[in-house]
Length: 167
Image (cartoon, rainbow, N blue to C red):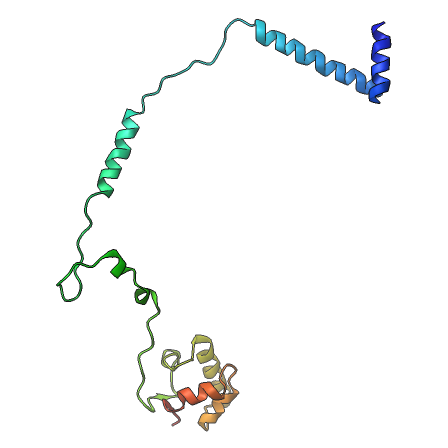
């Protein structure tokens, strides 16, 4: 009779004989484990009462250190205290502009990388290209030869023309 019930269940569920045996085995193991868990004498995890007072006092001490007054900063004149808003101004984070050069102050045939980067619009890469081309040609003959450097066009040359010379 049990066999007939299982066969009809297997056919309705679409299981093979092997699949039905595996399912029955899993149910059996589950119920045996449940029975052991229920009827096993009381081995339960113990509840420990933990005292957090020591940890709380450490956090309270750290908070009291943070709440102490910061060192007062005076402005350059020394008349008024500087606020945090004064310290976090947009100007403080902008890059410092290059110092203005005097007219005809950079000899492009002898200038080093640092001197060339002082020119407006000339960065390290362009300065390296200028030096490379200068070394290839044995120096520049005229200022307009800088147009052959990749990264220098008419506009950039006009900006730096009054600051450079050839010797």
